[in-house]
Image (tube, rainbow, N blue to C red):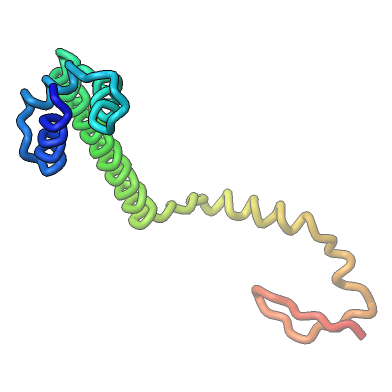
Length: 143
């Protein structure tokens, strides 16, 4: 190809008016000269990468994997939010525990056991004075 023809074609190429067949032709038939056009097309020839034959299948697989991950993430978040809601409801509306009920005999036995822990002799010492005495309580004051 002549130099003038290449120069005209390069102007057409840089302005974006060249066709793909013209570009492919120039990339294939690049000359080994040192002008800018030859250097550029040698670079393009060297760096050109072929499109994989199964590109659509690979893209579709990646899309499906991402959609599957998004579904799993939504399910996990939904499950955790349901569990948190149930836990909150259980803690908030927790029924009060019923105290253990004792019979009268058991209550009297527990009272006797508790009273046995205190020494009754110490209460009636000489240095203590009774301030108030009732059926339920006795109030002492020390002298």
